[in-house]
Length: 395
Image (cartoon, one colour):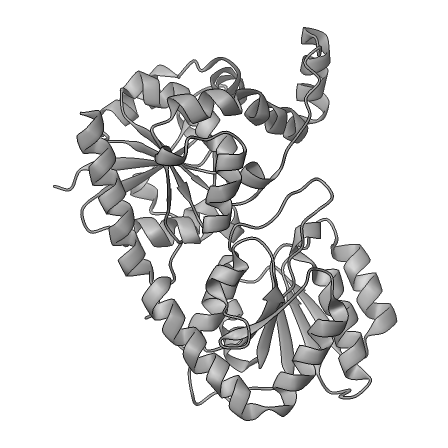
């Protein structure tokens, strides 16, 4: 029987995090169990239920026990017993806050803790008011829980860097950001999130159409606004080019209003299942991913959608941002513009629309790069080698 590892994500798991089970289900040496305090409805279809252990399903009243765990580290006995029975070798948490929340569990189970950093918690800096009293923090917890837990991470970041055993960065950029924030460099290794190149394979029988595709959350750092402005410029020359936006988020209403005022041919499809996203990737002629750094310094790690698109033979136009230049070689496998430079994005879209030979070059070389550098199966093996090393060193 394979040794067990716990994959900790406090909320298991939003629709945008299919990369977590994709990685775990490609392990050959370990068996992963998904552990968290809460579960999204999406978790039932995205995770194997016989290997999913959620605190809220085992404790009554669930809300009280979840709060007790997050604020005090007190672990419900039934949840703890289920996890002890697994005899886990380590805990692997995704995202910085989840690393902080998993610390008490790792200590109680006496196993190493590894945290993968993706974007926000590695790139954002927050100035904390150290004088906040008990009542102020309680009020924040009740009225603005998201803000409360973000601050919880930043208050415990230095302790996390000291007490966790190892950190995985999803790009060299994220590694540099962690070092800049005070994480010991010897405790960090880059391991790219891979793509299943057997699953993400283009169907050559499907004819590509004049569609520019955007896939992602509709939030500031994804930069969808600048793609809309670029398409508006393009449509002055080529009216039949269509923008298709897949995803949802707090900016959806304002982005739809912007598109309505600037574009003649577009649609917003909201959240779509992976199979539908893949179909659009197969018939679009390029993906736009113009990510930006926000006013608070938040940026991407390395967007998975860029890797999926290239695996599908779909050329990508993106920005010189975070880890994106590690995945796209400008002028060879795609085009990169400066952040917010929608005029350059428009120029690149027109170029690729007119130049079939260049599109085919980007398609072939982009696919080849994913197969060699961002291959899920190969990178899962590398992650398991990290597990071996940590377990051997700890024990």
